[in-house]
Length: 149
Image (cartoon, rainbow, N blue to C red; front, side, top):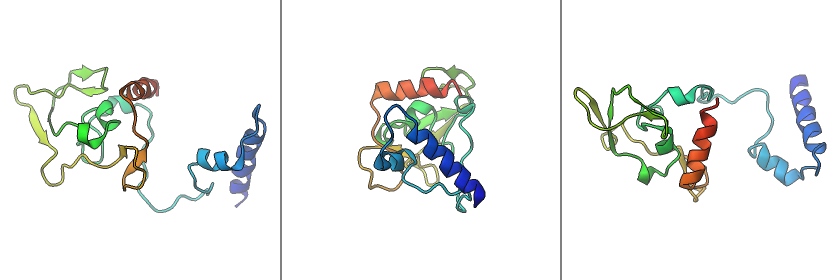
């Protein structure tokens, strides 16, 4: 309880001391529209983003081959790609996904291999939507930032 009060006081101090104080509605949005609870709910705990550029493929089942595809709408994500290549793709941040000898074709249309969800789309009412749609240039900018972690 005391730690929660310290966190709330610290965050509010920061909000209050900006050149233009942050209004309550914007504070809620910046806080992710959730309370500042110290105890996390029992749910899936995501891993830190440090070094995410070096850990493809993505999603729980490895069904998204690179960060660019992860930041893209599901309809633009590759339906099939090859795993096992160790040639790194620095632009899309993942490994090369084209066919190669002894490569394993990952087919996202097969049961258990879906690459849907965790999507950036304009409709925020859908389950699994993370945020608004990202333009291609915004995806690349975000990838450049993630490379620094």
